[in-house]
Length: 251
Image: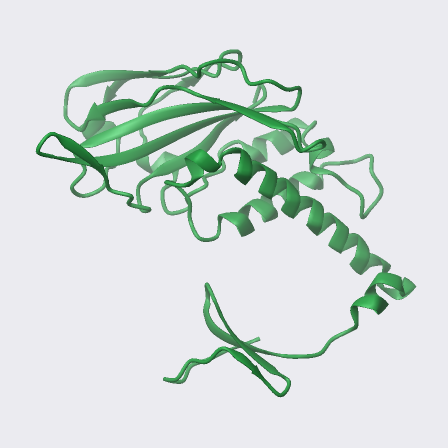
């Protein structure tokens, strides 16, 4: 593909050229390639079909996770979270050591601790990494899903958005079965703290244990607010709002 560099940017088709806008700007590509029917039937393209099947598996697993956490994702995500999740799920799928090539599954790959370790630490907002925003240590109870942040000094332990006066912390406890597509999620109450030098603590206890026998995933979200005349307004600042996976099963 090529990039459109002129003053006039266009979209649409012209002869064998397709002009379109993407997250990388205005691009152009040529029409052509091998027919879909040939790819689906020709033995020469068996590797292509296998790759396509596994890409679909990875993309679907990423979508399942995004849908499961959609209520949290609304305020803490970047424009490439879909692509980044698909790439991550593809790596996890590679840990499936029992299925034949072309049929490897994310659900089987996640049996391995190495695959769970890849999922742990995933940031849904690549502009606001948990490790770059929250500097205080915290613990995760893998039974209850409770996340405890003791001895928190918000002015020092949290890198906050300009103009923010308060920060809200919340945890979520997710059960997701990548084989069946079933998921259940519970949330803690939001703990809202002023950004100051007072020592505080945040104990975030989900309302219950999510139903299911899939992978248990623990999440933490931080959102920033500005208080004006006693009312807190969400900054909706994508550079600081954090949503991260802080645990997977017992990892």
